[in-house]
Length: 225
Image (tube, rainbow, N blue to C red; front, side):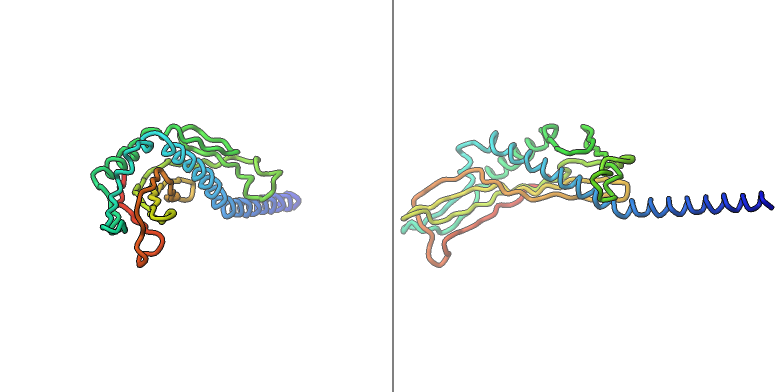
């Protein structure tokens, strides 16, 4: 009789432990995955932005002939008739820029408080699920794999605006849409951001007709990887 009571008592303990463990795992799973993915995405987006900015703040896009990408047509009264692109030259710069972007992927620096391997694998502690700073670094670590810049779209945007009396300010922007791939224990999806960097500017004689307003913007075709 005592043996049966002891057996039932141990069985009750096992059930309670199983139930508590299951609830804890369920809580961690529901609260941790989204947080892990947000942490990884925020760190990666910041690192990729710094990489893209530094890459195109110098190097191939410093060429003085870059403004030749823009074809600005004026009439006899020095008014802007059209803004267009020299597409062969534009495609050359965009293709060179995209190749340069991919060739230097090893230079991406991702700053994070959590463990990271060089192959883009992040290890985020399970303690983050409890929203307690004392527990943030405790528990086993969940791996997340990131493929940096898995896809890129690049294009030019030109902005022409009045600059003083009978002068035009021409600005050339590089528009980059970057996608990365994130693989976590529960999901696989792409994420990323769009960047717009001014890479050249020039002042020329001319003015914008009144019917066009104060600014004219024109975008080029997009080159995709």
